[in-house]
Image 1: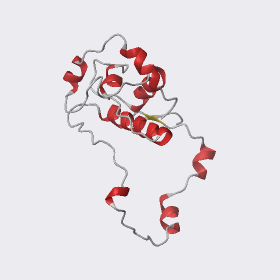
Image 2 (image 1 turned 90 degrees about the vertical axis):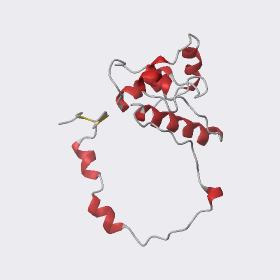
Image 3 (image 1 turned 90 degrees about the horizontal axis):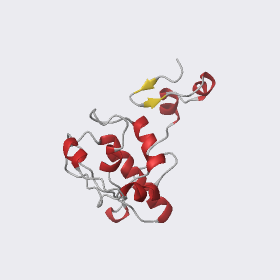
Image 4 (image 1 turned 45 degrees about the horizontal axis):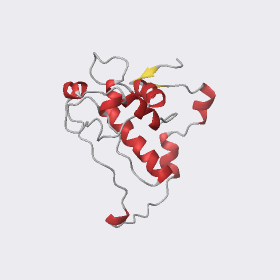
Length: 149
């Protein structure tokens, strides 16, 4: 059945497209020997570690970090975006958590704010929902929109 929803993700591939997908066995057969090369720590890419334990913000934290990485690739500097702002903007704030589908509406339409405007680290869901959203935050967030993550 097309367009079934699996945990917030939509399957939109046609049967013809699915027929072109690689099967797990094909990938395993094609893999050659792995040449492991250890990178120096100075060459590692590093981004902030977000502790979502019990905050119900895992999806928002993932996309906020990804938005920062997109800006890093584009402009060469990582920007730390808040997961609290998009979490407050989701469709059903009366429910805990949100889906990727929900976030796909927030980031392209409303954008996001920097972490230092609306801190989201080490706070639970109820605390996140109580972080005051100032009236001009919506205008600031529009600066950092992304069409599709």
